[in-house]
Length: 291
Length: 282
Picture 1 (cartoon, rainbow over the protein chains, first blue to last red):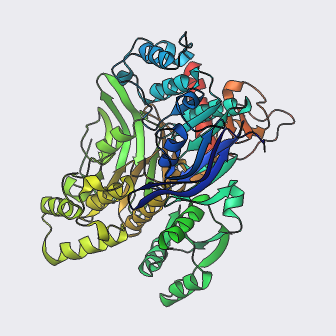
Picture 2 (cartoon, helix red, strand yellow; picture 1 turned 30 degrees about the vertical axis):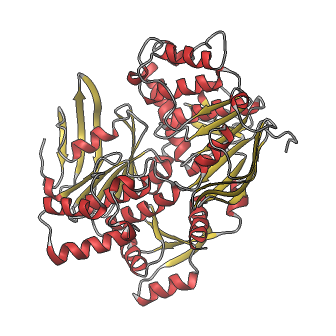
Picture 3 (cartoon, one colour; picture 1 turned 45 degrees about the horizontal axis):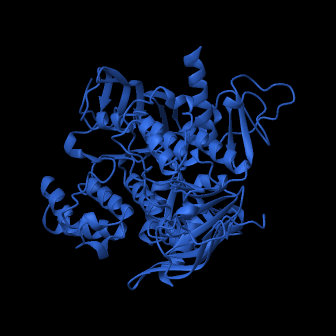
């Protein structure tokens, strides 16, 4: 890992009255790294991002971006795509670009990518979500940022367009830009070099996807009737779920499942399989909620 | 076009074409919706998912093709976003309102409400305004309202979009439970991992079906040749990144020396979309 750190949080907390939105979280993003921030709503991801952007002042601990307290200068060196994309709906594509260029003291608005050229004089509200997202990316990259902060960049996007957005993110990282990205798509965790899992304001796990899952396993149950098996385990109040026509259960000892099935005389084959990141995350969230 | 239909014929849309505002929104799309199964419709914004679902519940009429569904009162529909929830009513009041529309009352309603609130983890939020709930809780409430009257066909338009991963697990469990209780469930999603967990899956792109069938069959029918390496091996336009690896695809059989890999749903849908684009350009 590079010794240079673009963004750092050091035991940073943010409290609103008695409510702790972020509690003693430490993290960092280095050049060329893609760091994924995952967690349930209310986990503290957006509050952490707002502190890095300089929009919220920490209650405790320290955040630094490019080695200093976040302010307008650091904001000028980072590119940010918020979940709502941050575009002006009533302005045209070209006007949005010119507005952002003026805000970042760029003398010339950047070239539009080919897909957006034909829409340059259309109002942003009328161009569709896919093109809006491309425009938000173009604006975020126009001032050649050293750090990119992306909040749910691919929500609602079709798989090919999503792949193209990730290609663009990887191209930035290959050029040394650090990337901090939040996502609800567990499959996108694989696009990240490192992950930070947040729950109830705390960082509950970090590392690669494989590091985080570790040797956690789930149980997959094959039976003649998945619906009957599902109903039996659901009645036993076990955290049962479905994968195709196989019943799956995480975070539950095998003997508990066997007892529940035996009680209803359900014949089944139980296999231990590696847990998914989603299952691990749900288990960690449950621990954080009950502790 | 016939509706309502009986489930012995099989519910679903069969060769349906829909034109909206002069443009073809769906072209010859078939989606079977059998009882006791979750059928997923997957695609990005503008793929035609909402149009298909609204047609299935009788809110849009096709110009051709056949739709078979139970009578409207036996369908449950959860629209996209939180539009199936009244924000200014409490959770309980939302239940009361929808129950009244379905003529549900008394002990049966009380039991059903208690049961659904508990399954959805909303028992402690029964008196809160729906508008004050988190996104995940609001979606779970919308789901409960759609299924309150125990419909035969449950149609869910992107129930999990914008829902965090932990609430998504709860929601998926509720959906699977509905199917386990013999309901026909059709859901639109942008999450390919959800599509992979459904019994059958319809992949839509700009109103056209790219694939329809069991997820493993769709994977097995991935067109062309897919390889993985450190860099694109052919046309960069036919490559995409998966973390530190790059996938490369071409429409033909493997070239000499190429080591094809099996596709997951992500790779498969991208390959299907690229193949469709090439067919359209040819």
